[in-house]
Length: 134
Image (tube, rainbow, N blue to C red):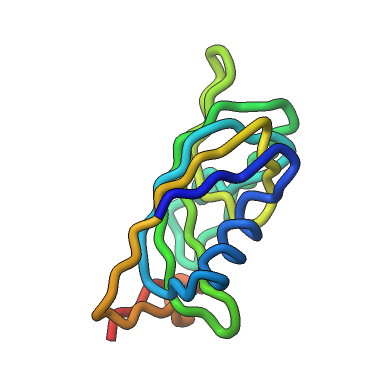
């Protein structure tokens, strides 16, 4: 499936809503375009479990390249989105969890994976919800 998200839309909620509307509960996606006004997890502070996340905020528009997975969630599909953002010589890489607004346009290619039951389950060791295949 190909899709477009327009200026001012919230990236993660828009992608989640599209997957929900189209009935996509397992898949992989690729996005590119521009984003602004968000924050991302840019690694753990130290190599410990559970991790203490380093949050990186961005306000200006950045070019963005993304890949991620879709899994069934409690309610809407669960999105795990990792991205690299660039603006001039500044580069940010990490996991955008919720915040981030489309700047002009973001194009998406979503590949639905059928015949697989992918969910996210709490992982005691990491404290995160990790992909589980059934």
